[in-house]
Image (cartoon, rainbow, N blue to C red):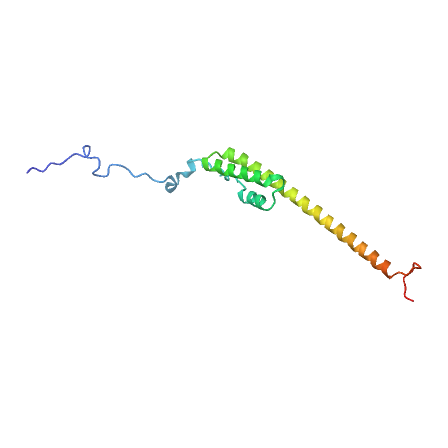
Length: 144
């Protein structure tokens, strides 16, 4: 049997004819390159937890429900890769959540003011009744 040797051109897998690529930072040639940094834009927020809270606990005029709807739409758009649409829906959900929160805070403040006024009126009525019960027919407070 005759031994046949093949030329490297015919068998490119044999031998190491190719030079290994080097990292340009190893040679110190990095000074020739311009490094561009692209700022990372954070993903749009959908405010789903805030909307759920407003829907469950503070739902004046169905604002919590509408905010939840827009939050879900924002999350769907984010999952589909439409970041501009998700940003728009998320912004709308945030505005609705803020309006619902302000509306509820206004209602709570009005309720506290009304409660204080009612307590003040009750204490005044009770005080007048106590004074009237202890007064004589002569119009002065006193005993015998």
